[in-house]
Image (tube, rainbow over all chains, first blue to last red; front, side):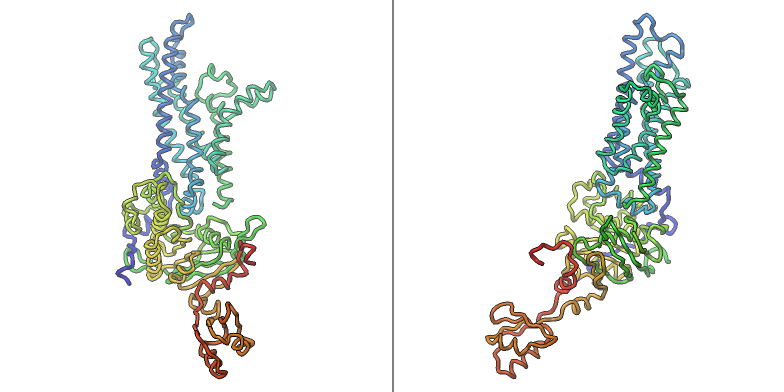
Length: 284
Length: 315
């Protein structure tokens, strides 16, 4: 009997200490999950390409048009820094769509494939898994966006160099907006993760998040009523882009950058709280 | 507990008490109580929709009970400090992201419990997945998906295994492999809870049976008792004097059915008794064959009233 029975090797690779469920372990698990999917890698690559590509496009446009105009920029240091910020963060308007979709898919991909059952069997309390997912997604998105933003700065610097426009990366007027743009993208990803957790459907989650970023602001701008204008600054994408974009770009500047950050955190908090509540309440 | 290789104390039970699950107005699992003891394979049998999968999902906390409780080793699954080391579960072939490789799936599962890369390699070898470990799961056959599910269940070297339809989609070799594997795990002293709709396979694999119908336990007994007690043995009798014999046999505990001309199916009397009776009355008998009840017959008899989705024609 024993000769044909398969062997079940013991637990040599385990000891009592290491074989326990821990939050650090769950973080490592979520990191393995994030990097072992092609869709994630492609999403992050496209964020980098978008940020660099649009920085190149905008800086070339500014260089070609701006410096011929009578009121040409390139005057004060603040103006020059402003140009760098515009160019280095321009890609965020497109990259936010990629990051939002990625945030939804990180969880809905698990529901559509059945992976969620494996995840919540390994982490039956569920909330640590959500927290780990959010943490890993936030950190990785932040680092990728920051690298892309700094890369976009250098692309802009290369273009501007021939036009006597310069600003140091360490200039707070340049660095803070780049940091803010990365923060917006990573918070948006976590917001999308919360929405995805609530709806558990890729199509539904992506639809809701993109509608909120693209459709709702446009509609509100078309509504002539005053309330529409009052609400507008508190939208996720308005507050988010106002965190880093100079006033000229978005047109409205009702809130300070720190207030904008609070508004974005409010959206993220609501989304994650809703996700956590439903995750614990519902059957997996 | 003794760590490391060698004999571990697997003295672990699954205990359900008054376990109930309602989905809206429908009661999927209706106040069931049972225990699954260590050292044997406990089969979980029942028609589709009987509540088997829901029960198994409640054991590992994926579904919340509407009432009652279920514990593993005395604690609800979610309260254990190392759930994957307590229970290995195969609830669904392919509870795996299709875009990820088998190896990365196992590494991600293992990481939650700090289980080593070496152990991941061990379970890949154990389930014969070496050649496909670096391939994405989307391209896996159902059989390979089942092997991966079993590999994941074995990651924590758990004392309890819960396997929902583990032979689904496996080729005959795979079916044999699972049967030996499961028997081996039970022989090591582990608690094995196994569902299958393949009754013949269940008869070969399980020591004990829990039969579920419409969310309730119909039978909870050793396999041998279920087979023997579910239906009484019957005797197949072929005789040119079938009608005379049928009249002679008629009695309170004996049932006689005429299946075709000259053939009787007798339950409640041994073949020897029928032969003696025929001899006393000088009736010729051409065939006298005792038919042992199979698990399949026992199962059909048990669940006859509890089949959820039966076609009208059979009613």
